[in-house]
Image (cartoon, rainbow, N blue to C red):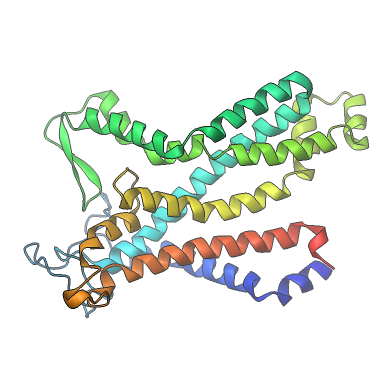
Amino acid sequence: MKRRLHFIRHWRNWVGLLLLAYLAGLAIAAPYLVPQDDPSNPQIFQRIGRATDFVPHPPNGKALLGTLSGQYDVYFTVVWGLRQAFQFGLSVTIVAAAFGILYGATSAYLGGWANNFMMRIADAFLTFPILAAIVFMSQIIAAILQQVGYFDVYRQSWLFSETLSTFQKLLLKFDPVAWALILFSWMPYARLINASVLRLRNIEYVTSARALGAGHARIILRHLLPNAISPEIVLAARDVGGMVILQATFSFIGLGGNSPWGALLAQARNWIVGPGGNPLVYWWTYIPATLVLILFGVSWNFVGDSLNEWLNPRKVG
């Protein structure tokens, strides 16, 4: 009861949850708010005017948030981008967190030289720049696929002039940004859980479970992780928004990724400064995507702070 009252008293707890619920509702309702022209082949851009019209149009009855150059609907991309953001952020964070937690907990449970060796591997991953990994994987994949096709910037998809081999089809499903973020985001989880499990592995209930013949996996999964995982849950909640922002950033600067918001902002960059140096002449080309990207990241940060207060008994008083 005391925790609930403490939670209710802080406005940011409610703001984060309500904002996140609202964004999730928009993502779920995307097919009804802005239906796809071809539901079997969903796209992140949809044209609602003449392709030869290269001047962005302001919000109107057909385009609630205006259009980009080429008459691509901004509202369509913003709403469908929410779906992709939730899918990308949650999947990358869950995979990275799950691996890091299991790795760090196992390392701490083994202890001694095994723990030192495994954590030095984690430290080595921390020194490797994630940007280099994304560039390396993206360039290799692009070089292979460019031999048989080209990349459509607006559709954010590859178009091919010939039949693809099985290997090339697999490459199409490989997202270098997602895998690079997974490969180089699990280490903080491993370090956090490692410190907690090192403190708990010789505590009474763990010693009792070991004396009763419990296996190593059972001790880790049933006794250690439930009592040490709270900080990792908080970190994961905050990372969801961060992963999406990183993906949008890499898409914006052309280093890969399939972020609709990043692609939208990349197409709008030439319209940020309008005639006479006025940045508000074509505001609809970049402000909606920027705003929803900020709100997405802020909502997950607020949820992370809320979980920190809920799960940390020291915060309640």
